[in-house]
Length: 150
Image (tube, rainbow, N blue to C red):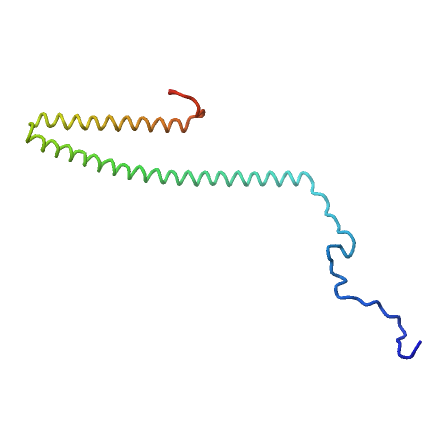
């Protein structure tokens, strides 16, 4: 040995990335976790289903509350609109009678206005019946059935 060489054997050069895994496990194969028992899996599924059912029921309750609130206000404003329409129809009828009475007499003017309003009411009732049929069809179980079911 030469005096310039150390007495101990030289260690192999350790590179700085030797402990880093490049897609391989440096210390051997990883330890696989123990299998999950079937009872735990079934319990988790039941818990998840129960939580989903509770969330769905909460959603249905919230939608029902919103529909109830909306139906209440819609009926209140519908009542106000119906009252205003009644008063407007009365004013129109009285005005038409007063105008026609000067030309054809009060009795004939009243009968004409009455007849016209009766025709309008019949037309509105016919349209309401058609719309009611659409509502019945929407709630029927078998949508392909033709004709009326009572």
